[in-house]
Image 1 (cartoon, one colour):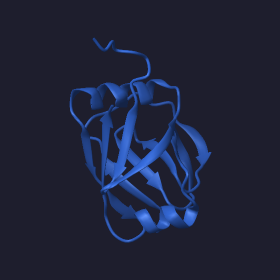
Image 2 (image 1 turned 90 degrees about the horizontal axis):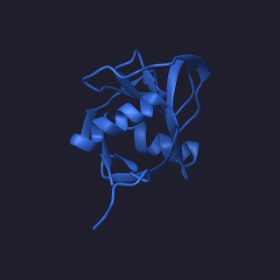
Image 3 (image 1 turned 135 degrees about the vertical axis):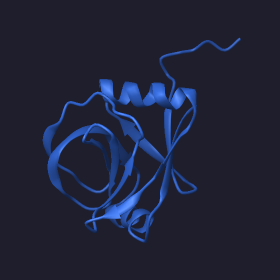
Image 4 (image 1 turned 60 degrees about the vertical axis):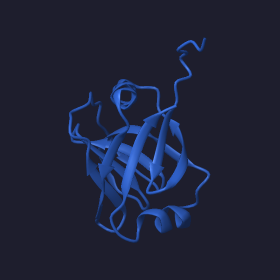
Length: 124
């Protein structure tokens, strides 16, 4: 019998590419994890500003916005109900979800900078 452990892992896929994410330890990530436990969360993303992909989560999550300068690979909550994944940099008040690891800025631009993408958040 497999017991539910604290090691429930939130997974992110961009298109059909699974990416490794170092998630923050905050109530926004906890809320995202709870959402993904019910069903995988699929978000249609749109390119914006030449440095990010933005998509609506369809619900509001707890937020603790802090003025932040982002870098390629950062994942943040914007306006409480939108997920943003960066392949460039921006400075704004966001709540940090986490950071995609093991990808260079160039690889992030390749993954996100060539048209709209779909991301999926699921629990493993």
